[in-house]
Image (tube, rainbow, N blue to C red; front, side, top):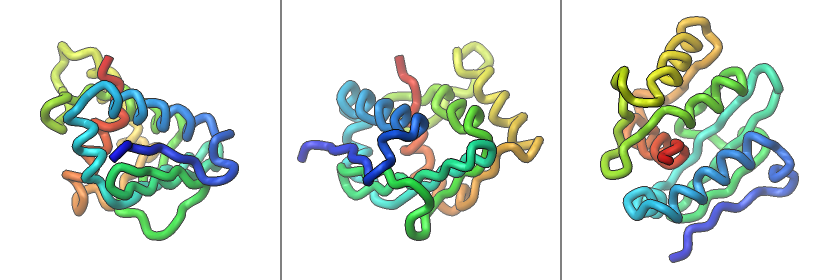
Length: 148
């Protein structure tokens, strides 16, 4: 099966959607383990930017993701925060063999992790459904992380 990343009508004009979709395409083309995870993913995640009032839903269905504008359905995980903080989430480094973040001070993404934690403490970033879908969230993090 060929993995597909598609946009619903009007969504390709949203910069955040384009950035995340490009990152997904790069990672599934470059890493076989991430591609295997992508082929197994089913569910949806919503990103709500509270400062730019942009909302996106990524609906995954076993090797196919459709990016919708707005919140579509009931997502497993919802992330609400400033757009800059949502973009920072992609800078947290993940391993390519295990879907775990590399959270040590000597890794390049340590500053990004600190910014995310600071944003959570300041209520500029909130996760809904985090604990109930933690394995799914880790796969998603690895899918959109900058590995290069």
